[in-house]
Amino acid sequence: PMDAPYDSHQKWPRAFGFPEGVESLADYSVYLDKVRGLGDSVFRGEHRYYDSCVMPSAYRSEEEWTAISSASNLSLSEYWQVRACHFLRIWNLPTFGLNGTEWVGKALHYGRKTRLVDVTWNHEFALFFACWDFKNPPVNKHEDGWIYIFAKTTFRPMSVAREMVEKGGIEQGISRDFRDLFNESLASKLYDRVGHLYMPRADRTFNRRMAAQAGAFLWWHPPDEDFPHQLICIKVNGKAKSSILSELDAKGISIDVLFPDRFGREQLKLAER
Image (cartoon, rainbow, N blue to C red; front, side, top):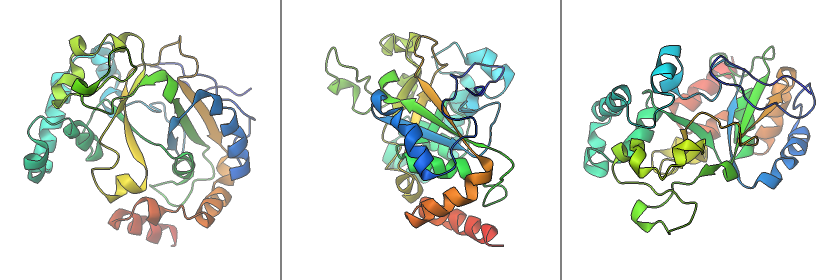
């Protein structure tokens, strides 16, 4: 078995599969069959290995990690990241209000530092992101890509209003005020044990890009060693990225489909140079 991704903040579970990694859609299907027993999952693809792999932007520096990794409460830094987003998207205030939960997802989407991690419900989209190099499109064959799978059985969903949560169920529920997301007294002790909470209403309501990518957000928490299947890693062979993208293109999955906007068109032009 191959070595798992590792960084100074935490140790990830060992990657599984053959050492050379995914080299085709057929290979990928074989890998995914090993995950089926974990139920529905969400996925994240990165075109190379980063020390901060699947770390939310709010935690990527050692100083930030030390300050807030063990706390579920809203930090002053995170609070002002959301407030700064108000100025970027001020015309959304009448729709979401000043403290609407949607603002945390919007803050991430527009480049602010939050504790959310953006993921997709579609495993093939994640494979595309593990192949495509956004800085030098289309691919960097010298770097292996990585797919991170978050098993749904290891995090609590947040998909309905908190007042609609049934007693005894796994649904965490969500407040109408983003500040409540950080309030430990309202977290039903989930922060002690559960690594990831699904952030709802962010995948389909923002724009065409999020809808095209079957996007979603995970409310991040350090992985718990008692949940060995909480995060599963799959390597994508760098030398096979071009052929994998061709296979995905034949299925209608391409940069201009996943990014149906100016950014997607610009990436396509760069890739065709």
